Length: 128
Image (cartoon, rainbow, N blue to C red; front, side):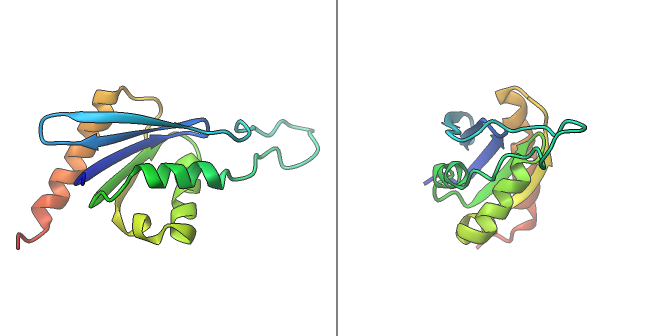
């Protein structure tokens, strides 16, 4: 069981980091749905792709049984992911400790940001 997990995601793929005290293991979940669309001026329709629930569910499953989860990414994917888990994977939603905006950081930057968040959370959690 992994204690901490960081998730960086956009509409095309998610990187899931199982974070240990001294290292991390990264896995990737790829979206099989439509690519994210941007609305063009004068275009008919909303210009938005439908939410890709199977993708978000696969990302939630990849987080496993982590006690604490840090979510980051650019654009709306992280928000859509949170809406998905709040509606369909409540156990995952309860374990998300922070959601941040992060464009395209390196693996090391994601892990460092997550460790900083987890360290602050761990200091506030009473030891049993």
